[in-house]
Image (cartoon, rainbow, N blue to C red; front, side, top):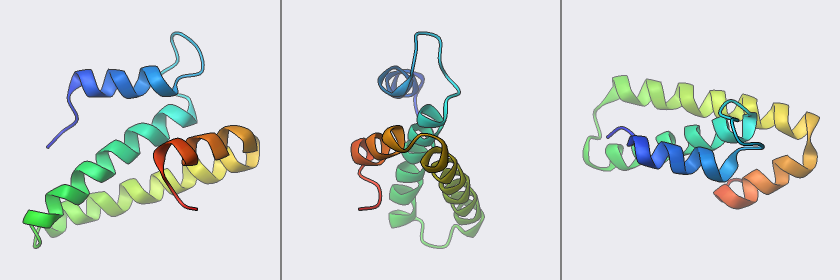
Length: 89
């Protein structure tokens, strides 16, 4: 259910700005998206897992906040991230 260490490192490597970057908004959005997709698959089989659903909603809210921040500070990077992750339009 959780993201493996290798998968997490792969996501960080593909979205980071520089070599030791692990906390930029782009990386955080990509990691949250991976967790959200994982939880979405989980809910296809566990429809009544409301505790995890609450966690999913918190992750979606956090990602939304990060996307808003990125949109306001670095529009080019925002458009690149949503294009690569397949978010929004």
